Length: 303
Image (tube, rainbow, N blue to C red):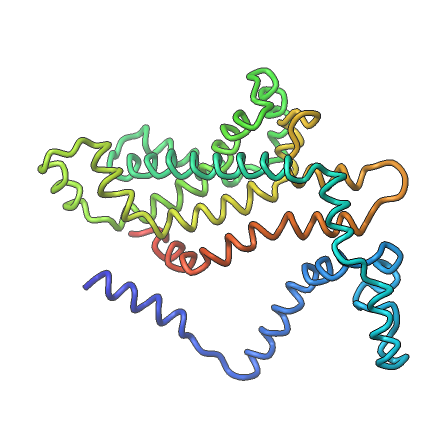
């Protein structure tokens, strides 16, 4: 009954209706919010000469000059997939894509595994040590990254973490606070009798966690995975400080290197690389977005 009641509450939130005026306002705000992405996508198919002269139009001519001139101007302004091929070639994009994918998947998997077990332990074992661990996780969410980034860079070099495997450990440290907070809120809602029944049936603590508790954590797990994946995939500052960028480049670093090339910047290639960079994370978000509301509501702090 409790599960059906929770699903009913979530469905009610989803079906919340607004007036017609609010709908129009929210639609306009949403369009303005995504307009930078649409502009980047449009300009990724343009020749360099028209990216700055006609940034908001697909044509080299204005509609005020007539429809025929506007249509003929599209052919002059657009260059097809040339920017994409140039961007992939200049940045070695597929190698950078492999590094970003490995770091993102590895970091998210390690954060979910370690933080879900930590949250379960903190919730079920009430000692001063577990309280201290929980407080430190919350404190890590408050401390700005800029306060520790130079110290982090130094210690990463000392501990030989300037590689894709090493930076996964670093991401675990920075991503643990939010993940532990969300998992702890959900674990508090899980009935202790379920775990006791599993232990009576002969399950060890690890078996109880992986066979009973962890499957129940699915909504929060997916939510944490989405949030952490979006952060790690788009992150520029931490990889630039930790990684040996002469050997390992992520996609954000490759885009920055494309901007720092000597001479004239190929803005068309940069726009194309930006589109390719954001496309995977957008598709991942769209595929998993239905779990966000359930995960956030389920991960709310319980009394």
